[in-house]
Amino acid sequence: MRTSIATVCLSGSLTEKLRACAAAGFDGVEIFEPDLVAAIQSPEEIRALAERLGLSLDLYQPFRDAEGVTEQVMATNLRRAEAKFRLMNRLGIDLMLVCSNVATASLDSDEVSADQLGRLSDLAATYGIRLAYEALAWGRYVSDYRRAWHIVRRADRANLGVCLDSFHILSRGHDPAAIENIPADKIFFLQLADAPSLSMDVLSWSRHHRLFPGEGSWDLGAFVGHVAAAGYTGPLSLEVFNDTFRQTDPIRTAAHARRSLAWVADQAARWLERADGDRTGGPTSLPRLTDAASPTGVDFVEIKAENTGALEELLGRLDFGFRGRHRTKPVTLWSAGEARVILNEQRARDQVPHLAAVGFVVPEAKAALARAGELGANPVHRRTYAGEVELSAVRAPDGTEIFLDEPSATERGWMAEFEHGEPGSECLITGVDHVNLVQPWQDFDEAVLFYTSVLGLTAAPSTEVAGPRGLVRSQVMRTCDGSVRLPLNVAPAILDHAVLPQHIAFSCTDVAALAERARSQGLPFLPVPGNYYEDLAARYDLSSDSIERLRGLNLLYDRDGSGEFVHFYTGTIGEVFLEFVQRRGGYDGYGAGNAPVRLAAQGG
Ligand SMILES: O=C(O)c1ccc(O)c(O)c1
Ligand SMILES: [Mg+2]
Image (cartoon, rainbow, N blue to C red; front, side):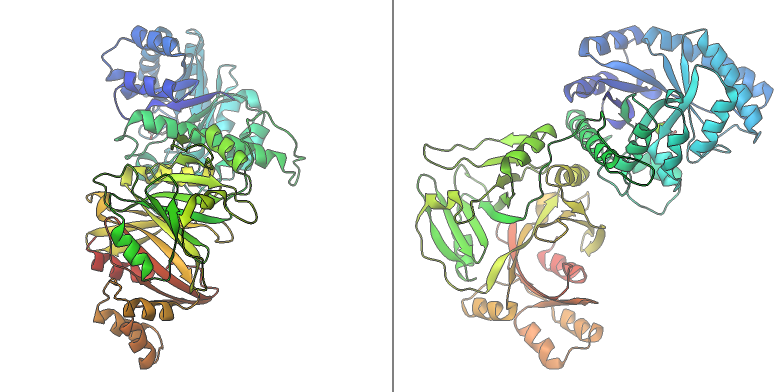
């Protein structure tokens, strides 16, 4: 599989973009014309740089408003195109993308468009150039790839084919299955983009909100599967117009983009291997990733700080027991039920308490790590001493260390390294319900792809909750069975993300009893305003006794068609706080309706 990316996806100058693409391991690039026009290097210098970097220049784009025009406009179009063909010869690019006409089309006729594209192709042929005709979703007359193919077939030139772009096809809700009716040698290029489902005009959606495959709502695996089933073997290229990626480090964005192609190729291969309807299934030439089962639970969470004293006190008031101090490191282990919290003061000078790592239980750690490596995840190096269990981890986009541990059925190997702890006892806490990771705005999409591709988590529909300083976007990444739940929260761009603390939520069998016990121990709860309880009484048919009991213990309450949710929060220590939750019946949410109260109380 050849991989490619349009330079429009990245931030920086054209030479910075080319270097980033090469560093990320792309085979080639699409040159986006405005990037070339703004470059201070000559076309020959750009060509030479690409060659030195080992990048092929796969496509020059876009040529706009070519067809469906009057003869007068056509004459100027041919002249305009000829200048581009000469430029492309200097760049050494032999494929040009021709977009369906948006601005100057005045003739809604396949016959006219085919004739004009045919003449453009004949001129291109004299320069050794091929044309890939792409239906833009907002094309004046041609906005459907099936019509673009119809016109290409009618023009019947060897150097004229179609360019398929997943955005234009899926944004219009067009069925990609008909791609399989296009002969492979007529699919000249393939551009991939995912997108969130939004209701807005398609042009703005395309120009600002495209995402890399795996980050939006579309099934790009099936899309690529249809194209591969048609017999296409050309490059898989990314074309993602996105305001965030245009502003952030191109080296990092290119690496993240490359991960999305590794993931989507694997998804497409899986799709093709499954027999379905007329498709027989079977092996494909698309590269597969190592299969790795999703995590089955959270093994531990680790909080790092120069001084973990306040956290020890907090955990002690909340049913957690001290399970020992590490043999060789300034690290302690606390647990309650299946919830394990590691407090780490190692190399944490000047650091306030923050969530540093999450350990996941995976059925096969070796496979999970191999897969993470294939997806370009950065390994974490932690010093271990002789005789200690070596745990392996990769770094999530926001810097959180993700440990992948395969505990033996009886004892977690690493726990034996903690000494002089108290034995565990009966308690109200059962385990980790969810871990809420606050994302800097520029890391959010990359994080969705990371957890989707590396851990096999699924993105639930995203929601927005009102904070005192803007909307906070919340996207839960989870396993199907809910054994692992990671709500990702994105702070409004104006806030430093550190203003929004991270939190760990623990599940318990009786949250009211836990709160009562914690209160008698002097736990600092997050205060909940009286107005909240009045509103609760208005929203739900709860007895005044129930409301008073909730109020007395700073408990929050939510309910949906399938069950109830009762929870409370501790005050924040450094950049973390804790939540304790009780799910009743089939309640599967996170009390989103209560989040504004929580955010306001935290001031973030
Ligand atoms: O937004 C555009 O104009 C534009 C240009 C070229 C493309 O390939 C495309 O998909 C969109
Ligand atoms: Mg396109």
